View (cartoon, rainbow, N blue to C red):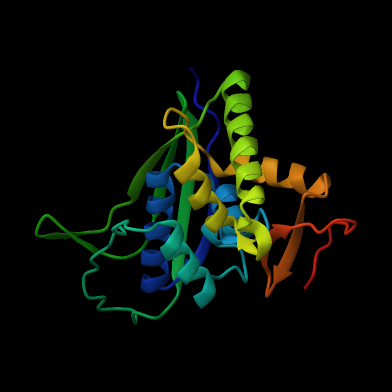
Length: 228
């Protein structure tokens, strides 16, 4: 298979900013989530985490976001970078970071190019950091089976009063994972699709508080709304 043309982008980051970016990309890949799925679990707009990963101007994580990501990546030991002492620039000075992404044979390969020396194997080196991500590829039959299971479990949660109070996307996802059949793997994108089906059917209401989306039970005769 011929590799697709690489996608490249960059941004200005401090050492701490770059270390944080690498840790979250590594965690996302480890958990098998897409950028949009992380945004959904954070209760944010679909582009929210992608803008952060791609170092878009003005894209930054709030303290609330960081707390939420700690819950999403619970029990995960975040990957760390050990920097050598920077003799030329201050630690808090922003410098250019570039990322190249290329798809080949069902894999997405990342190359993170940065200007700092890193301690590695008792030596200091300045070399790109490389990561790879397996691109999820499910059949239509598999997708329908996952969504049917989510529908079944969501109805159980509705009946037992789980949605009597607003629930975050991540809280719902955690609860769904506890109750689904053991032979089915749930991915956030399908939970999102089913939740929006429930919203359109008037079974749930979407409530947005401080920019974070929550879901709760629709009362009889009350239509779906969104509150700021």
